[in-house]
Length: 83
Image (cartoon, rainbow, N blue to C red; front, side, top):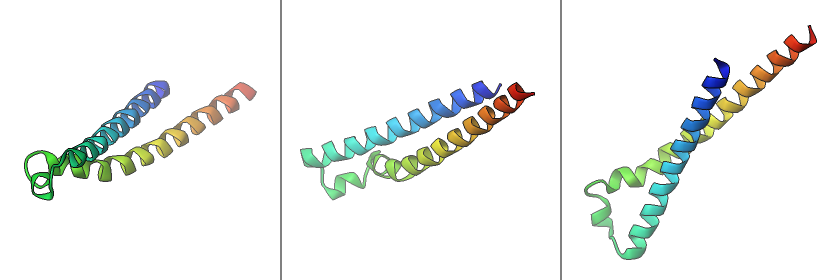
């Protein structure tokens, strides 16, 4: 079961970071094409603009959680192997 939790955490981290980076690149491309401030404030652009500000820190926290969960599992496995 722990392997499943780690796998789900890893996929969540990857998905959040990829989507955040894609939206970051979309904003860069949009501004390079000539989308102004007024256009970035309408439609789906506010969500695309804010997503990296929320997604990247969440991804970082999930990476830390994944490392802790993995370390705890490996510690328990080593402890069980020693007995």
